Structures are given as C-alpha cells and as structure tokens.
Image 1 (spheres, rainbow over the protein chains, first blue to last red):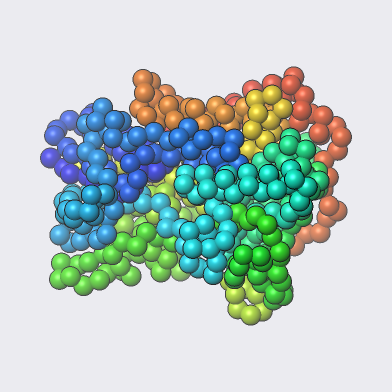
Image 2 (cartoon, one colour):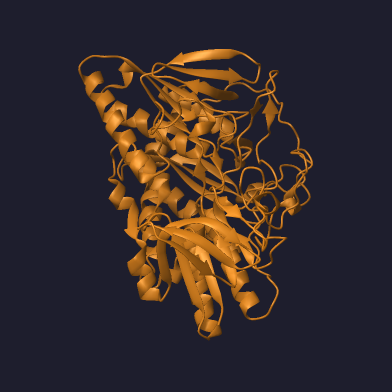
Length: 475
Length: 47
C-alpha cells in the first residue's frame, strides 16, 4: 500500500488527485491519497476577472472539495503545510481548527500555488496597502466593491484615473491584468462612463503583448501577426494609455511610484488601481533527518521546488530541452512539484535591468492549462513509481501548448475575447530555429468566438473538476 | 539560442474590416469551428 500526499488543490493539485485516483484504481491495491489544502474550495481562477468587476459572484467560480473527494475515496485535510521532512517522509500540517498533525507519505506532490508577495512593494495589495488584486476570490470581491464605489462617484460627475497591470518588476500573470483592463473598459462603455476615465496599463513587460510568455507570433495570411500588434491595436481602439518596462517600487493612497528600464523615476496619480503582485513559493520549510533546514537545497531562492530542469543558464542560453519534463525532484525521487510550485529554469520573457540595477522582467506564468498538464504528468509518474517503474510521463512547457482565452467583454451576444494558442509555451530554438515555436499551431485572434469559448471553458472545467459523469472525456 | 527583438515597424491598427469581422455572428460562428478544431488538435497532442 502506498500513501500519496498532495499539497494544494488548484489546477495542478486537484486535477493531479483526480488523475492519480483514476490511475491507482487501474493498478489495484489499497493505496491512499490525501489532499491537503489551505482552502476548502476549488476556485476556477480564470473567471475571477469577471468577479473583479461584479459581472460574476465569487461562488460561481468555486465548489467544495470535500464532497468530490468523498465520492472518489480521497482523504481531504483542510489545513496548511508548514514543514516537510523528506528523510522521515512526513509533512507537518496546521489544520483549520488549529491542531497540528504529522501526515506520513511514500510519495509527495507539491502543488501549493503561489504566495502573493505584496510585501515586495511598499503599499501594494488590498490587505496592508492601497491597491486591489483579483488573485483570490476575497480579493476579487473586494476589488469589485471598490470598483463599484468608483462607478458611483463617476455617475455623480467625477473624473478618475484607473491603473491596471503589475505591481513589481518581477511580477507575472500579465494576462489576467490584461483581461481585467479590457473588461473594465467595456463595462465603463456600457455604463456610459468611459469618457470620464483615464485608463492606464502599467506593466513590467519588455514589449506590449509580452504577457510573460515572450509574446507570440501567428500567421495571418502572408503577415506574421504578433501579440504586440494585437495589444497595440486593441489599446488604440479602447483608448488605453500604456507604460511598459516599468517596476513599481511604492504605492501610497494617491500615487504609484515607478522606475522604468531607462532608469527614470515617475509618479502616477490614481483613483483605483489593480496591480498583480509578484509570486514566491509558499513559506514551507524542509528539514533533514537531523532537523537541519534544507529548504535552500530543495527549493530555489524564491521558494519554488527544484525539479528535473537545467538550472543556472542565462535567458539567452536557455532552450526547450532545459525545461522540466517529469517534475521529479532531483534530490528526493519521491517528491514531485507541479503548477506554480515548481521552480522554472528561468524566465520566458527577456529580463532586463535598469541603470540603477533594478531587475525588470516578468517571471514565467504557469497557471491554468500548463499547471493542469504538469499536475497530470506528476500524478501519472507517481503511479508509475508505485508500479515499480521509472517516471516516463512528461509535460515539458517546451513540448506542450499554451491555450488561453483572454476575456475582453463578458457577453454571449456582443462579447469579445482574444483566442490565443501557442505551441510550445517555452520557445525551443533547437526544434523551431526561426521563432522557437511552430507557427502553424499558434493563434492570436480577437472576436466574439473567444467570448463563447470563455463561457464554454468556465462550465466545462468546473464540470470536469467536480468529477461528474464522463469527466475524463473533457481534456 | 534566443534572439532579442529589435525590429521597428509602424504602429498596428485594426482596420474597419477587422472590427466588422470581430462582431459578425456568421463570421465568428465559422471562426469558432476553425479555432475549436485547432484547440482540439493541440489538446490531443498532450492528452
């Protein structure tokens, strides 16, 4: 009998649990899966952009995990993992009721998601700062409340500046902020208030439309259409100003203080700001059998778990084969890490430094479909090891597609979204020397079709991840 | 080996025809089929 512990129940952890339970059922034997999560619900994060402007309630993006796990025979622990003891093979958990418990494992899948590092920028974030976030359901709900307060001021005749983007030079998830600014624009148009608002895109991207994935190119007839052109055309149509290549170093109740790649320090006065924070690993400590802290050995400096990637290369040197494939820890072979929890070998986007030495470059995003695929590969590899085989299942970001629907306006009739596909996510210049990607499999297109896809994906994913009948048919 | 992107080009703007296509139900219906098949083909590569 093997005991598998999965830490985290987001795209990688929860989907990994479903896949592993299915694989272990086929193997047979009395194996045990335990999922430990800080929150008792699964959240479909891509729809939080709608929650952030009150177009959807947070509950519509969530479901309770326990009934799903009870149905499948998976144990669920509502709590926070504080320590991992890889030599002794147990994790120390602080449960929601405050009790501490050591849970032993034979295999461990770390899929913790990110720690939202608002502390990296003074005054950032809704809890101890002045800006909003749409990264969690409570944050998105609070952002919606503040946005509606602003809307009522606009209705009384006020004018306002709204700033949306990233709140630090190394932040990621530009795509979510991009969706949010487009939805805010269209919502203000629908309310007849757009002319009262100065809308500013503030981001750390080296180029517009970079999205932390080094942008994308797609064939459009004889033209190579890029995400930079898409964002440029869209912002011109929407009347959105933009400041890119920018780090935010401080926020107060009136101004955002920035530094750009030319070394210039600027200030932006604002009335409402939604800035995505940088991510780091969850604050989990790793100890060896003698009680020595080995977190630095298992994780990278940001706290993400090191896996089978080639670390230490520069951005220019980094290529497809350097990205992790099996998501197995090189130090402890029974530990895997997936989703945002694994340490990437480097950024996808070009990192730069200002003349003052400030690093300004997006970290690689690993959300949604990429997280799911890595969680699936790690789960199947654990099943292989339980059978006595070596891990053979791979989901390298240099071998898997990135699929994204960037919502711009939520509506079945008259909605708008960008339909974006890239293959592979991490450029592989060995395989595709010209662009690092297979352009025949890349798409960037704006239209109503994307808005239909966005709705379809919302309901399809929530259906699949509740393990409802025929869930395995939904990829 | 990566290449730094340094090319200069005129600012891109969507044409009135592009905008009409984005909002045309018939055009978008057919694009949904084409894009759906494209997504499906990519998804089948990894599932």
